[in-house]
Image (cartoon, rainbow, N blue to C red):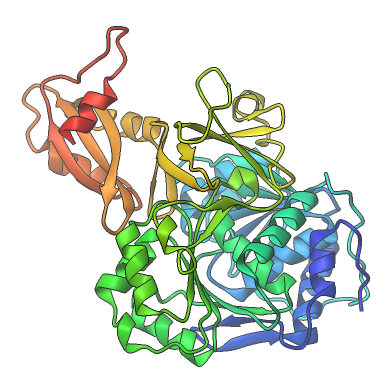
Length: 488
């Protein structure tokens, strides 16, 4: 059996795996468990090294809802090779840009690589599953807590995402704090319907395997009842989802007809879920705890956690910060505000990352003297609970994806028939937030609304498009978004 290493996160994780540890693909029942799970992770590590990669090199891991992409991710980390995670749905759009930006030297996918940009470059293209490969005595690459473990994409929707530099120390600190906050025990098994390329999905994998448990992957949430049946048949103790997932369960599934006796907890992150929906979930399954969580990729994953089932009087809050993080609320001058006053949330602690890859200006703006500037606005109550009031206008979060408002406005403004565009995020029942677009059309631009709708990427949920004669502006010429929000 391979030896542990003080700071190689995956090396430590493997040491904690027992006979009950497993990864399962619910769609076909394929299972890797116990010693086979450890050997498969080490096998992927050996395969990558045998392909000519060296510790410190970067490999693009194309992530789907499969156990194999998780094994490849963990195997790369174990070997000291830095995985660069990318959702397989974004590969055709952002794969080339992400590969180049990361300086990757290889790509791993579940199948052969069909994209033209890969054929034009001479680098290893590794695909498929991997059983035990080479020596299972391969030891984890020694590292320090500050060594880079993974390049995690921010949850952007198009273009090359920013890549957050997550260290082995970040992963260990955040994983252990989440385990404490959720009181995760042994023999836990999570149902996961999001890939590890999303920091929420990765955190569920990390925490449950770290406790010696398992993860069941299910890509069939288009038919939510199938996932609910899988939760029951595999004895899952945890279910994780973004707000849209819970809205779908409440409105478009037979949720209440499933008893789900094994389920101990629901996890929700990735945006705001209406308190009414949280309460409805709690009432539907009173034996399972419902955790509302707040986080950012730049803080590895979770920042705060709130168990709505235990403290219904705090329903609507984002809970308390994890026990190894410190939070403050500051005004525009960076001065800390007293409880009850609203300002920007800033976070400090061992899970706050060091910055973005090769983006010094963005890093300096987001990370300042050890504090992560979240861009979210909130206040603290007398008990220290976080009550989020809104976020900066730079981004909205729809169906768990962070969408740049500037990116939306630039894309729409480039559409024929559009003279100018402004975008806002507005509340949406299923998506959490959706786009509201205000468009100044060019003269004689017939059918511009339909043209814009057809041109928007499908992952951008748009609730309304309104044609206006002009956009309201402030005295200094900026778009007066507060006036637009009144209209929206």
